[in-house]
Amino acid sequence: MSQTKPYPSILIFGGPGTGKGTQGVVLGQMPNLVHLAMGDIFRGLDKASDIGKEFLSYSTRGKLVPDELTVRVFRKHVDERIDAGDLDPAFHTQILDGIPRTVDQVELLADVIDVKRIVSLMMEDRDALIARMIKRAGKSGRPDDADRSVIENRIEVYERETRPVLDIFPKKLIARVNADQPPLAVLRDIADCMIGVIPSNL
Image (cartoon, rainbow, N blue to C red):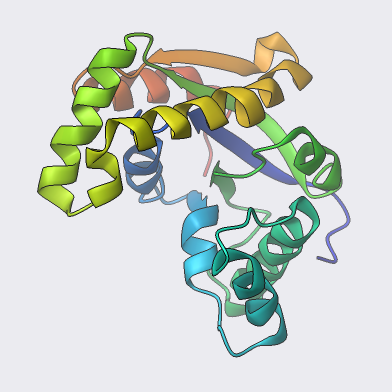
């Protein structure tokens, strides 16, 4: 990335099953917002490219992708979107889903993103969350989401590795949203906490 200043960004946080991907996609339809999901970026890599092969060397062995490589892939993707003309840092605010997901990634992205707001989707009732994911598995063909032990492990990984990222940022940036509501109600609450963050003249 060759930007002279960090790009305005809104981070969406939430454990597995809280609906951050669903909400991010909807928000990304707004004219001055662009949704960037790290999972989609990884899946869209050219697997024959050098960086794609590097990614596969970890993913095919079930290994976590190192923070440095994750950030390098993200930077490359954003550069490509800018070059293609579908991301204009002077006009768009990025909605980031899945990055940064570790404390180290926050440091590696310090010169890249200017965090305007953090939306933290909360669902305190773990049993209700697991039931939601199992129900979703039946509808969307996600077999892993039907295994309670796998779900619980994913939740624990989020609590251990990703939730601490929230502690790095000033509390005034963080808006906690109840994710245990119908999706439209969640979207309304997210929109409310973004008022004044997204430039109104765009």
